[in-house]
Amino acid sequence: MTAAHLAEYWGGSEPQTYRTVVFYFIAPLVMLGINFLGVEVFGWIESIAGGLKTVLVVATTFTLFGMAGESKSCVSFSSISMLTISSET
Image 1 (cartoon, one colour):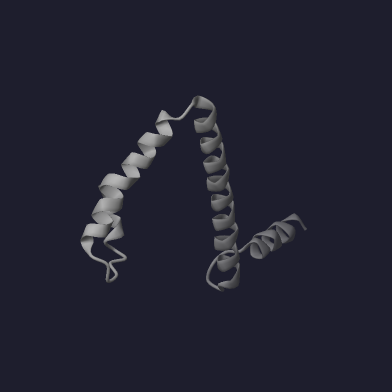
Image 2: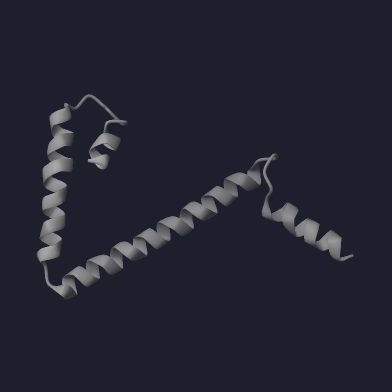
């Protein structure tokens, strides 16, 4: 139900019926179908999805650090390393 409410944020011109059918009927049926598959197939799906999630988290982390490094008001890696170097001398 939360996904259906979240989809309302993007709104668009499509009718509400489309989102209701997708989030309340199609998505649960797909998940139920995946659970009926054998353990080996389910394991591969979980492994691939887990790897994609890991890549997404790492890419988001580097992107946010890159954006913070361009900003003058945020602490960046270069200012942290300069503080470390200057405190050692």
